[in-house]
Image 1: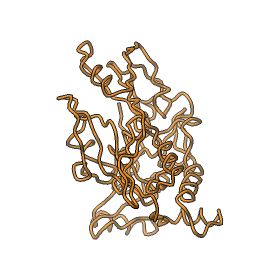
Image 2: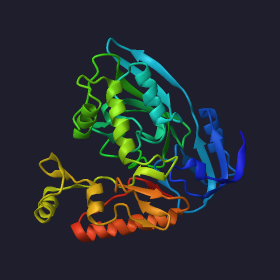
Image 3: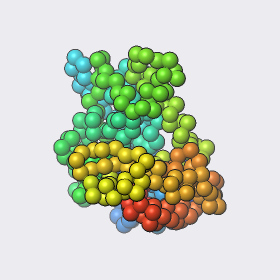
Length: 337
């Protein structure tokens, strides 16, 4: 296995930020992963997947290990269910397309989400009424301390909104090597709960949508709102939609009676971060080559040569302004290195 030196990570992060890894290795098997993890020449090691949920703010004085494990297989089938395993290095959207090609349903609402399969459980990816936890069966992960593979089921992962055990109590302890989802072969559960999907289906003149129709609608919506990272550097949603308690929500809505919100339960309300950022005056604003997307304020972008530090400073300015105006704290969804 080749270990390279002084490698530019710009092609490996969707923000398109220039930052150099002191050492770099690409692993294609679990054995190669174990080999490089056990290499005592490199004390500090950092794991890199699809690079879609990270912001590089400096050069990495470490061995960067790029996870490139590939493979998709059906491991079990019942009358209406199919358990399908995908390795961590598979591109998420390409995996969704593979499922649709084979008339396998359950993740069509998660079309066009950037990143790889292995990072999907870490933040419990979700969009348009569906979260990964809704179809998750299990994943295998390599313990960085023992070198042993552990199987995590749904309960083990402790999924929450954009979070899991891999972002909390087990952060930095495991590398996910594959993910198994329980999906449908027929009698698909067509989820059109979000108004935007209904509107798009109406434009498409679709009255009885298939899973492919849902995917096409989601792709059209995302492409109309979100920039393609290949054309404009970004990591999708930079911030989580804040969830506040009833007291905070009551105080907020009294001052902002027209604000959109989603009631999760009697004491939890989700407020769209994009709306807060837009009201704070940042939507479409550009600061050098760092900016806020003109169509979706939740997305920070690199117009070409922004540094990770410049994008990070912009995010901090947004957080401060939103907190000053609304008393609500925005939490970054991306990992900052």
